[in-house]
Length: 132
Image 1 (cartoon, rainbow, N blue to C red):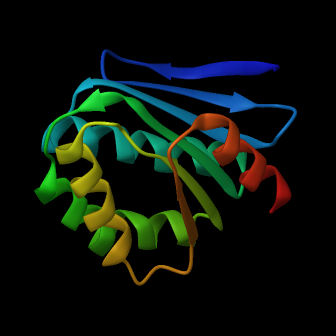
Image 2: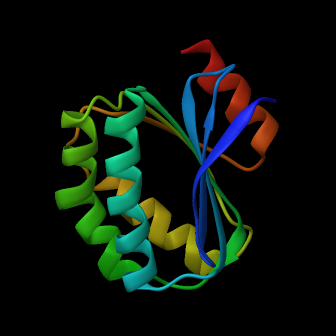
């Protein structure tokens, strides 16, 4: 898959997929509120730069609780992401329960017009996003 890395930090690698026209977010390590919010703001910037409407959000390599960032995501970040052009958000959950709870909190409380789908594996999440 032809991808270009746009951003790389210890907690997040963001790539642009030429074939699929989406941002691929590969989160890794122990996440906390600060790392999630900083990464999310970078996602917003790069989504605007690449002008794509889809995000593949991979949490398979993360753990930790980030409930405050989840609330901020639902109230602030996701509406901004929608305004920037995001319409589809495919979310691959971590196997770690605290991270799952944080992700579920972010999505279930958002009023943004983004269509979210959650998955337990990357291949199914990718297939769904391609069909959108």
